[in-house]
Length: 116
Image 1 (cartoon, one colour):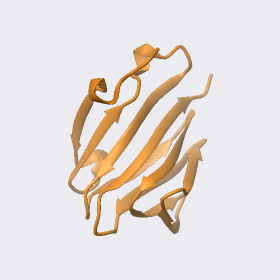
Image 2 (cartoon, rainbow, N blue to C red):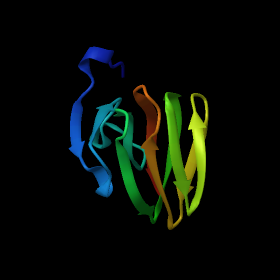
Image 3 (cartoon, rainbow, N blue to C red):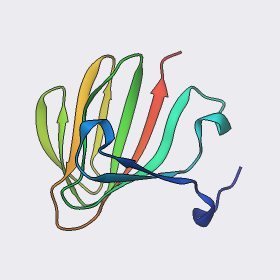
């Protein structure tokens, strides 16, 4: 299956998971298009100051890959600064959050995989 960039489904989530501002999700593929137990396969776009609040991934794991920008992320309480090319893996009941602390747009490719 091919998907051109201009054909990707987009949505805005306000104060996602209790965070600040709006997060734009640009879906590469939706859950119903995937045969694997994948819940999310999307690019997340956060403008400066926007964030996704702390939340737990129980019975699933989430992979973040920073495409561009600078983020402050927390993984189960440990904070780190992430830049383009960095990754974060959270799952198995652990929590995480992410915030755009830079002056430019933060773009994160995210995949959430449910445990079978």
